[in-house]
Amino acid sequence: MSSQSETGHDGLSSMLATSAEDSVSPAVVVQQKELLLDHLRHFRVAADCVADALIPIPEVMNVTLFGSVAGPLWPEVPRFYRDRQAGGAKIWHNCADIDLAVWLTRLDMLTEIREACWHGLNAAVATGRPSIARHQLDVFILRLGERKPAGRLCGLARCPEGGRDCSMPHCGQPPLLQTFPTDRFTREALDEERVVRLFDRRTGLVRRAAELPVYCHEY
Image 1 (cartoon, one colour):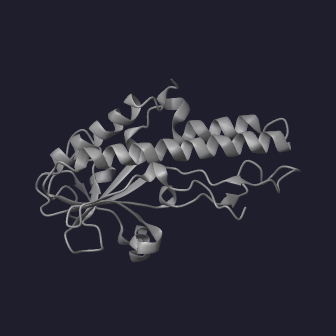
Image 2 (tube, one colour):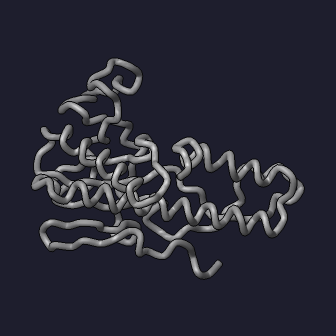
């Protein structure tokens, strides 16, 4: 099993860059595309495991996957190709983290929510997949009926910790709710065509991210 540092976003980027140092041959491009597809599969399995861990909590009404992990990957020229002679080669987009939106009926039990998320990441490792670092899971907390997050689930050991991450107004109110600049999240991010509902308590919906297409068939 790979270590966390080998499977994290920074580690994957290093692996991709290292394999491209000598040449950007067709074989290297194919190899890197496969690495990125497998990276996406790791993230989707982890998203499913986190959703499974959240479902038993009665206050959790909806768990939605959004961002790049929710949709098929698209081709792009990575930054470590752009200054090279063979800079036109394209591989799949490199997903940096897992974005989950979680709708709750109340926000005073985020400790339980965070513990469930960590349990979900551990469960993903138990499936035989490489580990995913906690900072690669971004959980946005929303009040029931709203589309704008109240904040993000804080990953710090203590809340408030008093550092730079705690400097935003109302951060840590309630505990473990981290506020962030509103311009870092758009309403369009949660549009129906951009998201995957993993769980909806009102309808009984349960969906698996691992079953989604992993790349655009047009490419």
